[in-house]
Length: 295
Picture (cartoon, rainbow, N blue to C red):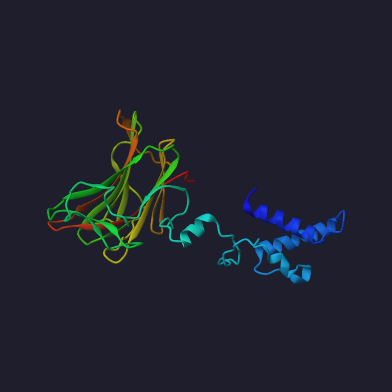
């Protein structure tokens, strides 16, 4: 029994205890009581004209309600919304169950960079949410490449989401998210990459080649963080969707690259950047989230 039905049952029992029903209880009385319960559950105040009592408000049996939405419909506040309001970083796309997350508030030690040292990988106060993020930079060499990776235990497979937020500078050539699934027998590589020159997202296909997605999307530098979420069906070996800010790419017919491999089981998440010219390129990375049981 869910909390709403449980609340309704308790209210009906309380109405019966107060003598609202005539014994053994007529259909009309039951209908009237049910309407009263509905009003208590879905309205801000009791409809006192229908026979309600102020005492029905105790003992705190009201369901917490959100304000009406833009269509005038009321919704009870679910656990996901409550968590978001209490400060969860999982607010961009609330679908799926959180399996792992890193907000970088406690440091960057969980991640392994390609280029070690404070000049290339550091804990920085340039945050998307909270106080800190990870800052990644390249060397001042054309096409230089840096990345940060983290290992995660192999989960029960389902449709899974991989999300991160980033802020880039003007010298960035491209940024990518690469998720390796190594089961011990199969290596599956799901990768998406954004190229600044063409403003195009691409994905790594079953042929181990990059393929462009449409439409293009402009990701402003310096001014703000952008959020990216890649969802894959790791049971059936398919991409599902890519969400970039307000743009959604349907990828349900696309397959990632997969090949045999004895390595694992574990997941490796890699976020990487490349510089455009003989100048340093940098990006701030924040709020990395893994979800499972995605729709």
